[in-house]
Length: 151
Image 1 (spheres, rainbow, N blue to C red):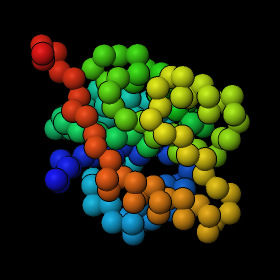
Image 2 (cartoon, helix red, strand yellow; image 1 turned 90 degrees about the horizontal axis):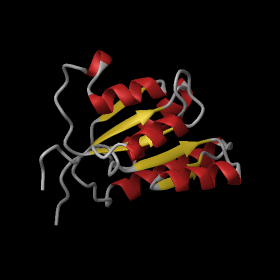
Image 3 (cartoon, rainbow, N blue to C red; image 1 turned 135 degrees about the vertical axis):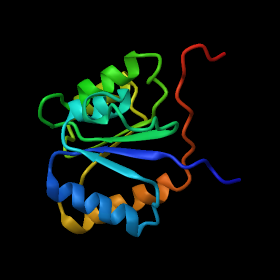
C-alpha cells in the first residue's frame, strides 16, 4: 500500500540546523515537498493560508516539524493553536528542538504533539537522529485535514 504524498512544514529559525535537517532528510530518501519557515507566525500563516502564503494551493496532507525557540511565535504556541482549532487539530506535529527539559516535553505531549525529538548537540548524533526521522517519515500515515461541512 502506497501512502498519499504529504507536505512537510519545517519551522526552524537556525539556518545551520535547517540546512542539516533538510539535507539529511533528503539523504534518508524523503522526496516530499519541504516548506521551510523561520518563525512560528510563518508556520501558522502557511497552515491557514494567510500572509505570504495566502495565494498558495491548499496542502491536503501536511506534517509539521516544529522547533520551540523561535521568534514572533514560539513552537509551543504554534502547537497549542494547531491543536485547539478543529480544522487543524489532526495535523501531526513533531517537535524537533534542542529543549530537553522534561517539563517542556510533558507539556508538548499534553498539548497534543505526535512525537518529541531532542536534537543532539554532537554533529554526528544530530545527523543520525535526522536520518532516523527520515526513515520514520517514509512510513508514517498522515490524516487528511478536516474541512467544514465534511461528515
